[in-house]
Length: 335
Image (cartoon, rainbow, N blue to C red; front, side, top):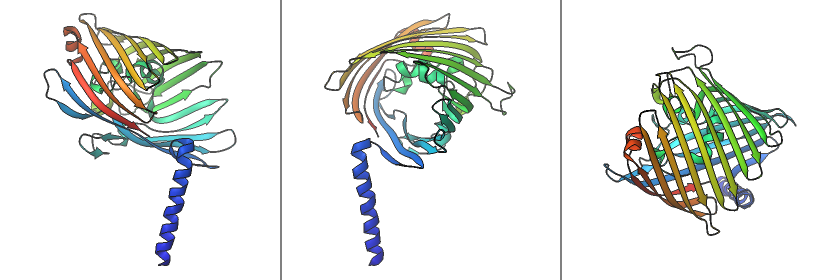
């Protein structure tokens, strides 16, 4: 009986803590003098119909994770993040194709005056400042188009990496990342590096990134040609409007060049409805194609949304991306 009462009291305390904390912070987190730990997730289920393929229930790159910091002193924090892939359509968590090391896993040290150093597998400055503004706007990952050749499967989440992110100097920030993988036979020491800068002023953000890659292995044991890549993205956000222009040029070691030019626009109404439009031009020097996407999203606060996207390829873009016209509907829940 006493054990039962203790259990009931413990459960009551936990429920009270969650109920009293959730409305204020809108997150599942524990925080104290020691630091903070936050459990988070983004669950994305899609129904897609691509030309030439059967209708498919698919996952939209769902994930769960924990992130936060530990207070080491008044000035220094130890930061961390562990993220796992989920396959909603198959009902699989942490399988051979979706375990933790496929996502984000790092620890770091952070100081407001010095910046932050991270070690592990992490988002690159290239991704955060030149890809994220435009490419994670539509919902079907089959149609992301800014990854090609050397940057495909590698400039997003860099494994075996050390990164530095500076503080903001009147809106100007710097980032650098080096990948060091002793198992790659094509390189010794530093396998690749990324240097980047971001400038925020008012409603505008400008990102510029350069990557030099000297390794041949990518994630999932893929082999890609080396390349030097330069990219820039200009973003404007104000009063419901969002507009992005992006340019990327890759000088590939197989004597080819690849250019990607993208433009995006959306407007969010007070009702939470957001119509959006994006166009990419993909040019490898021989084939020049265009991909156009339009979509409509209905957001519920910032935690859930339903959406419909339509993606159209001309003949050349379909060849370059090995994809075709597609209609996607789905739901996304974040916490």
